[in-house]
Amino acid sequence: MMIDPDEHRRGLGRVLLRHAEETLLARYPAIRLETFPDNVRARAFYEACGWVSGGLLEDEGPAKLVYTRSAAAPS
Image (tube, rainbow, N blue to C red):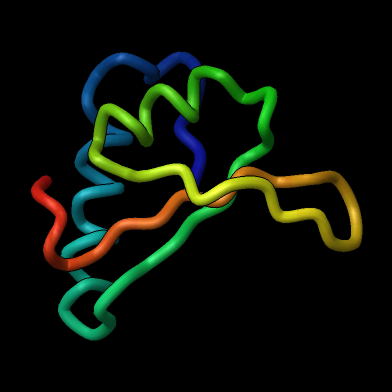
């Protein structure tokens, strides 16, 4: 998910993320997302939204930081 930089800090990312969380957590007990470790703004955003860092995923291509969220976690 990406938001046009001109639209940052308007709450659109939070609305989209919350909708995705609600939709997915209605079907699955836990969900995950990935971001690049050096994407400090995205990491701060996900953490502010209640996502928990699950560590680095090092497979093909650049390493990614994995975040998880469960249905039991508060929004």
